Image (cartoon, rainbow, N blue to C red):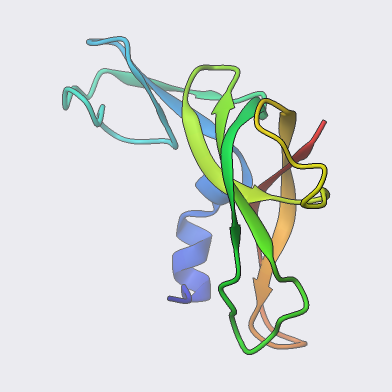
Length: 131
């Protein structure tokens, strides 16, 4: 599903930076800026920006093809535990299949996701690369 430019603009803060919601009631943390705690429902939350550093806990190779382009296949999708303690799923870039391993340190980087056409909106978001 492609977002319209207006929809993407509204959620851009969570697309361009990694925020963590910290609950003032239960003390648990969740990825992304949220108005309430996803665990206890409290609205006593505050948001901190993540350092973007973490450890790759697990990964998989994906051969899903989008827009009939196979130039960037396969992709590697991983579960990253950030230094703040929360897990996030994201694409791992800048590493080959033979170099990828669980436990490697990674950092969040801003990368291009897609473009509407050669002169259209370019969508950016967070991916992870080895440190």
